[in-house]
Image (cartoon, rainbow, N blue to C red; front, side, top):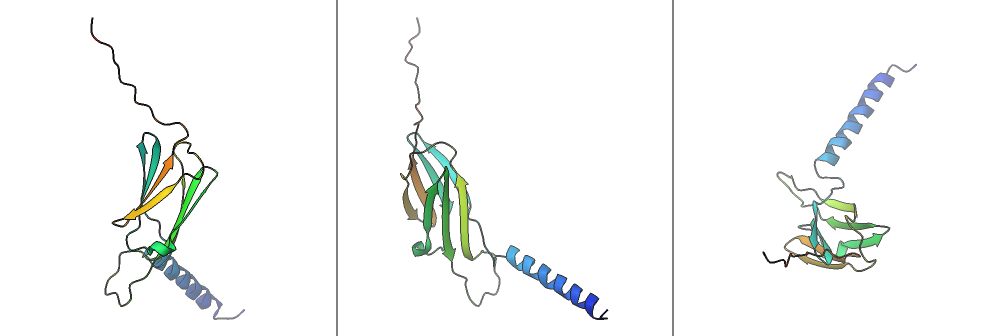
Length: 132
């Protein structure tokens, strides 16, 4: 048995811990925040992607889910860093059924907005009864 094995095992464990901490501080994959909104005949997905290069954004719709991917470049020479960078991939399940391949995307002020046509639009029924 080599006398250095316990030291090497501890060193390997420390390196693994360091990698895990770095992934928590934004140097690894990140997930943008998302909201779903009901717009009667459409579902709208809002995804916060400030600083993401629009050319890297990808949208894939399949089997009741939508996957959004993209990349935000790292800022070099940071003195302090809190904003995550690198690639992201987020898969979200539709909260209601939508018509396949109806997604229309737009990007404004760092928010990706994707509208999907609902399979069964929400109908607001207003009572037209008059008091007797």
